[in-house]
Length: 129
Image (tube, rainbow, N blue to C red):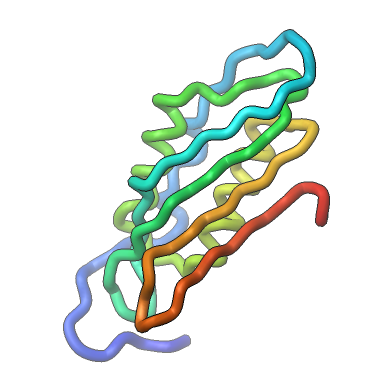
């Protein structure tokens, strides 16, 4: 495993992500697309120890459940001190939301702020699974 050089801030592992906090409520109605966006997501790069700041877009078609927004916010906050690679964070957000919602369709797209002159956007879509 790669090790960061220089000063790093302490961080915890992905086992500290609190996906049990995600709450849902029943959805009954016509098929519709629901999109949630936040620019307040952060985790820690396990290589550099520096914060990774990102925009997260959750785009889904509910089957029988809607995620409760306050629980989604607390879920995102549980990543704040977690050392996790960007692509792995995107995958976990997708997996946790898929498990909680069991939607008809789900896409999670995370766009990270520029790091080292490189922009990163990672996306997981249920249509590609």
